[in-house]
Amino acid sequence: MAEKTPDKDFLEFIVKALVDHSEDVKIDRKVDEMGVLLNLNLHKEDMGQIIGRQGSTVRAIRTLLRIIGLKNHARVNLKIEEPEGGSGRVMRREREEGEAKLDDLKF
Image 1: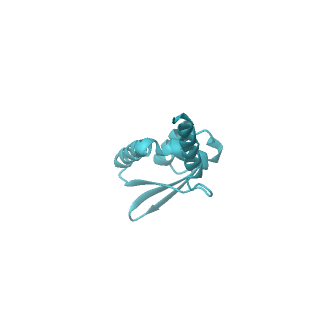
Image 2: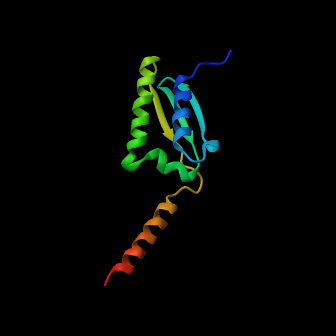
Image 3: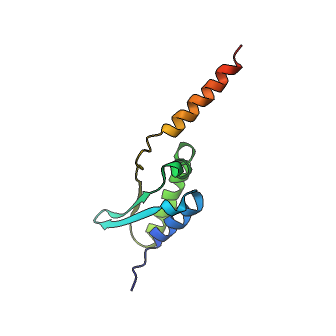
């Protein structure tokens, strides 16, 4: 019989609804003496969508996971794994392009 994991199922549902590359979403669930740890691996282009502005989206997801954990008498934590090659280069490049456009507007 399959083990019930409402925390993992909930996280998978929410994350796949938010990201563009839902096929790359992978969640590992580990249980130890500290509680439940959910490791989230996703496509590097989807990191910003999950983290949100100033971390607001991931903070909301973590809050909801803690509520699910309380309901099931477990402490649930979420860890987002850094994707390979996901060092923030896309955001840095976009910022530089934006600054270049602003330089064109200066008189």
